[in-house]
Length: 450
Picture 1 (spheres, rainbow, N blue to C red):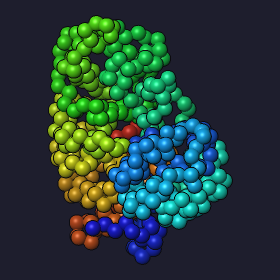
Picture 2: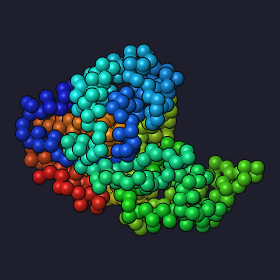
Picture 3: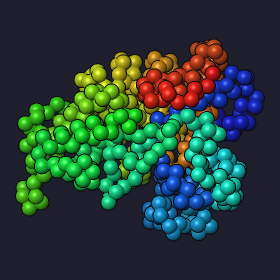
Picture 4: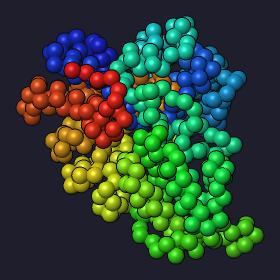
C-alpha cells in the first residue's frame, strides 16, 4: 500500500538519487479549468478560495448541509467573499473528517507550498495570506509554474458569457498555456446562442449547424491543442451511427418553437449521435486529439453508477470507428479504469489520462499507474492534470501526484519489475515525453529535463 503520510521532501530525504531525479521531472498538465492570471490576481490573497472546487464534495459526504456549502462557494468568483474566520462551524468541524482524503491532501500541500504547514485548519490557511499576497503580482503564473516544474497547462475554461460557456476561451494566454475546443454546447442544442453570435451564423437547419461547427474548427483549431467532451455528465457515450436525414429531422424538431410539438428524447439523442460523429471527423481532419470525460462525477448528490460503469463499453465503438482520431480517456474512468488498460493495449489511437485522479484518491491512482505500466505500452499514459480553477491548488495537486509517481516506481523496482534506470525512463515518459509526442505544440517549449 503506498504511503502518502509524509511530505514529498521528507519522503525523498531517505531515498536513492534515482527517485529524487524522478521527482524532479518537469510535468505537462493535460487538463485544467484555470482562471486567467488577471482573474486570479483580482481575487487577491484569499486562501478561503483553496476550500472551493472539490473539497466541498468531501465536506458534503461528511454531512455538511448543502445550504451551508452553497453559501461558502456561491461567491467564489466575485466579491464580497466570505472570510476564513466567518466560515460556518460545521465546515470547520468537518475538516478533521476530510484531512486525509485526496481533496484534503491537496489543500494541505497547497498551504505547505505557500508558507503554511501541512494541516487543514483555518489558522494554517490564514498563516499563508501574507506570503501569498507578496507573490500575487503580474507574472504569478509563470513564476509559480517554473518554481514547481509545471511545464505547460491545457485549459478547458469555466468562463461564461451571458450564462453560456463558449467553445474557446478568448483571453490571451501565456506561451505555456493551451486551450481546448469544448464541444458540448454544439451537441446540447439549442444552447449555443453566444457561439452563433460570435461567428455571425444562425442555426436553422442541420446544414447551418454543420457550417457553424466547421467555422469553429477552421477559425480556432490552430489555436487549440485538443477537443474536449464532457457529455458523459448528461448521457451515455454510446453515439451510434445515424443517417444524416434522420439527424436533420431531429434537429428541426429541436429548433421548433416552444408552442410547437417540440422534440422527443429519441430525437435529441439521434441529433447528438450524428453530431458527435460529425465532430470526430473534423477532429481527425484537423489532427486534434479528443478528450472524453469518463468515470466519477464532480460535485455531490449525483453519481449514476449504472451509466458511469459503462462509459468505456459505450466509447469503444467510436475508438474503433475513427482510427484516425486519437482518443484520450480522462480520469482513467475512475473507479472503473481496468477496462481502459485493455483499450490502450488494443487500440493505437487510445490514450489514458490520470488528470484529477491523484486528488480523487491518491492510493487508487498509484495502484492504477502500477498496473497500467505492467499491462499496456508505456507511451499510452499521461500522469497529471490538476483539474482546478485555482493555480495554487493545481500546484498542491502536482506535489501529490509526484509523490504518487515516486511511490509507484519505487514499488516497481522493489518487486523486480524494472531497474532504477528503467523506472526513471518511465517517469520521463508519463511526465512529459508522452505528452510531447501526442501534442505537437508542446515540443516547442523549453526542454523538460535531461
